[in-house]
Amino acid sequence: MPQRPGWVIFGPIQKNTLRSYESVITPFCQDHGNLELEELTVWLVQAFLGSITNGRKPQTRKIRFAHLTSFFNFIHNTLSPNFQNPCNSPMLLKLFRPKITNWNIIGKEAVDEIIFRSAKIRNRLILELMARGGMRIGEVLKLTASDLQDRKLTLREPKSGREHEVVFIPQKVADRLREYAAKRCKTNEDRIFPISYETSRMMVAKAWKMVGVPLRPHDLRRYAATYASRSGVPIEIVSKVILRHSNLSTTKRYLGKITDTEAMRWIENLYG
Image 1 (cartoon, rainbow, N blue to C red):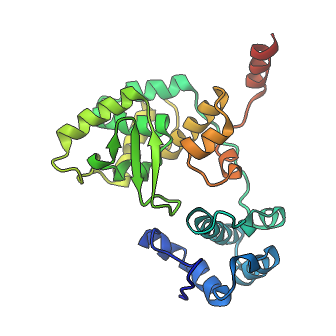
Image 2: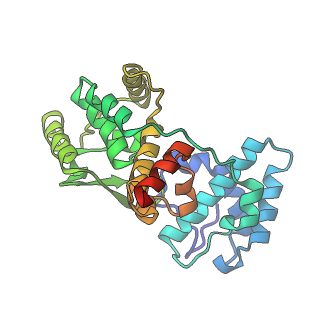
């Protein structure tokens, strides 16, 4: 893969992530690695995506587009803040973007019940970090004692490709997490929750069965965003602080669909 100083630098990206993106990034760099950033036009990117997705299934086209979008976001976030991601053009979004799904977001009462009825402190903390901190389950499972700083958690080698990211959590959750880590971690580099991804999924499934609300780990991250948004938090804060997205369009796909009943309630709260 060509290495061009100034725009193709892969240091912060995790090896597994780079491997999964290889089918897109490798041919792109082989074809266009000698270009400057300003030469990466929408038309050039469209032609490239067309060449590697021609005859492919719609889902494959969506995945290839998502991989290239993430690659360009990485360049913008770590190398050149002035670089405009060509995949964000309306034309390419219409051609390749996955169909937006309006998720059915569970309510605060159901989330609170799921959390509070969790018998194990470990399970409750994992659920709270996703529902109160907007964390991905993979991020929760990678936390070590050294990542705790008062109400801030440092994420090392995050999905975005940045060197690190910061998650803010409520004080009560931070206190319980610090106490739990002190009992479970022998060194600062020990994982706080040394369980597998599959075990965590089973834990979430068991939690929602107690209250009869279907739930997957990522639904709690969506809940965190939607609850904050409907509580009056500006969408810029939801996007950049809670979800840590690189652009608002990604955040909007996380927010749940507003029903007629909810719309009328908000109007009454505002003007009733």
